[in-house]
View: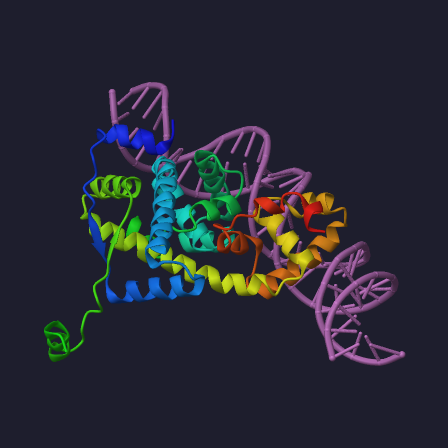
Length: 139
Length: 139
DNA sequence: CTGATATTAGAACTTATGTTCTATATTATT
DNA sequence: AATAATATAGAACATAAGTTCTAATATCAG
């Protein structure tokens, strides 16, 4: 069964009332620029963009579930990893040993069912970890 | 001059002709599901998603420019890298030495203005390199 | 109190990546 | 034909990341 069909059934197959959307000037402008660049109708471009963003969102939900299985400390380490820090830098920031970071990364990768940090960074590429920059706030 | 146009000018900083968008049933459903999940207005979620997709698109354009500066061989190596292959695996696939791959990666990273493969994989995370799986087709 | 997790840390490896530099042969471009 | 770019390859070294183990505290839920 396609995801769409499943989704529709889950919702009780209601006939959708064709709701309209409006976007602010800035978004409209960017949309028009992009449509212009690609010589395509603005509505079509908007459609494609929204489809893309939605699929990304739903894909991210699976990783969100795995994220929630991490301990507080593991989340902190993963966050800093995704912010681009190396094991050594993370150890310094959290004031623990390099080997401890390796332990946390090992466990985190296992819980994410991923094989290396590169995959992890890619999987969570769109997540905003800026709030995790200053560990103190989370301890 | 129409009354509306006159009014807009009189009021200054006119909102551009507020163009409306409609999306098909499937998109509407997903939007509503997501809005429901997050207890937020559908229009607001749509706004956020569109903003996200647009910024991703424009960011990708910069990397596309850099990608086009790569030589054919460098593109091949970067593609396989982003597909998750290691230097050694790429060397085997392309039937060249490990050191050659290192050269190509070094040059490619420089052209992309990135520091390591992790950043590269993240930057091109949404690109589809499946066509590059079989090098023969591109040589 | 007690088992289950979490947090910390290390040894002893192995592999993978990154850096700097050099160098030759092959293609394009002018 | 001469220059520039590309593709190839290596040495020699440095750092980073991943693997397999073990193990001591600490904390929390039942």
